[in-house]
Image 1 (cartoon, helix red, strand yellow):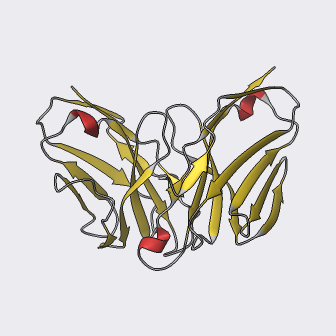
Image 2 (cartoon, rainbow over the protein chains, first blue to last red):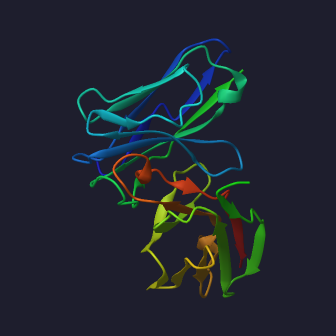
Length: 115
Length: 114
């Protein structure tokens, strides 16, 4: 596709439920990032992939958060045993190049609400 | 203290006004500076991208970076109602791993009134 596609757009989960969020980056893009954006805040870094390698996962808030990109294209962010504080928009971004490029293309995000 | 500080606004201006948006930062390793625009329920969209200090102009938009003061600005000339959005500054240090991550400001909510 022409842009970064994320699904679902909206997800309501009961506290304690597991969720999986999908990101389809722009075809051929090497770098893929996940960010978390709380209401009224700027996005905060979660994790970074270069192709299938997860080079940085230092932003993942707890071991309930897990991300993968097994074939270097589609990525999934999984949150286990969701908590209310996990409610946020989860943004995926990709770029053609590797480190330092900065000019990432973002998807529209998945809005997760934990009730 | 946050690495990147940005006044969240809200900022309301009349159509045609010059808008000035600013961010300060504390991490001297930042080398790449960006401004993103985010409409409601959309992802951030890259507006301006600057490496190191200096000015960059693109149409009605001008980005300035002053690394000595750790201060970046975005100017919007002849503002239009369609410019109404949240503006996010972002920066990174480059490098293969964590240097690629963007650190964002809180975002400034701008409304341009017709």
